Image 1 (tube, rainbow, N blue to C red):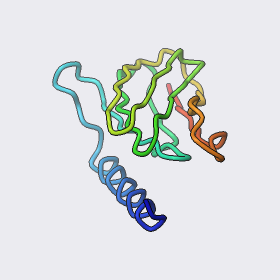
Image 2 (image 1 turned 135 degrees about the vertical axis):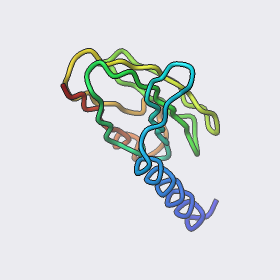
Image 3 (image 1 turned 90 degrees about the horizontal axis):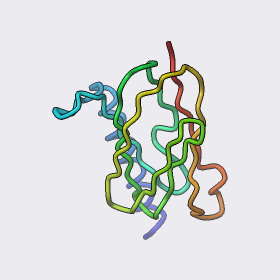
Image 4 (image 1 turned 45 degrees about the vertical axis):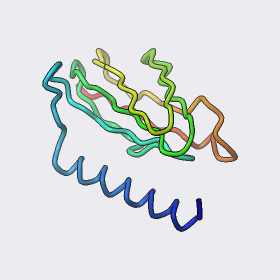
Length: 123
């Protein structure tokens, strides 16, 4: 894949995510939790910062666009494998406010160590 095509894909992904965030969170008809879509692509997550309310039920929908990434939030006890092209769903209801770091734990290349983000849980 050419650099130009990768850039176009990344920009399109960011645009779609921005539109989704602007419209607001969607609700799943089954569990009524807020759905947050997270895209993993070498070497970043989009969005890389997620703000939640304490006690709020959310479903993280994670998708890897280019590689088999990992998603690890050690302080919340969350760990998932992200298979390229498939959506992985993780249920979460944070019970304690704070800042929780997440990172890719499946080596994905030279800038793997920079593939991280944070979940901010507010009262």
